[in-house]
Image (cartoon, rainbow, N blue to C red):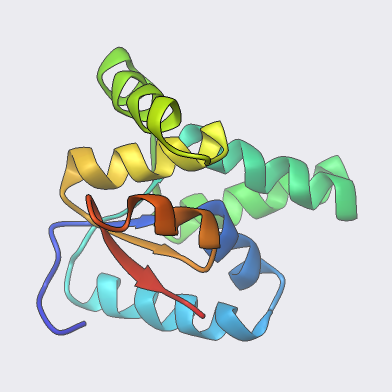
Length: 137
């Protein structure tokens, strides 16, 4: 990280890469370690946490999915609830861009927090002019 961001938002794509030991997952681990070292909060929108849970549950089991979410909490990742302010920002993104609604929540959280969004999901190219994105690919 060249400058210290206010916070870092992790998209479900990045977290799934990390949990699945995918190639991009090592970069996510590096970003998380740097964030902890520099005391930069790591955050996820609760809808994206749900995406991680159902992805792991589909691949393995609900028990494994519960363990994955517990691991994210142990890593100090804060889960941001979807209040009206966040939902309104996400809905505005969805009204203007061809993105999944859950991805709009990650973008909305990054915008609200003035944070860097970590992802490899190409859908976020739609909003890269309005938020700072750290691309994993």
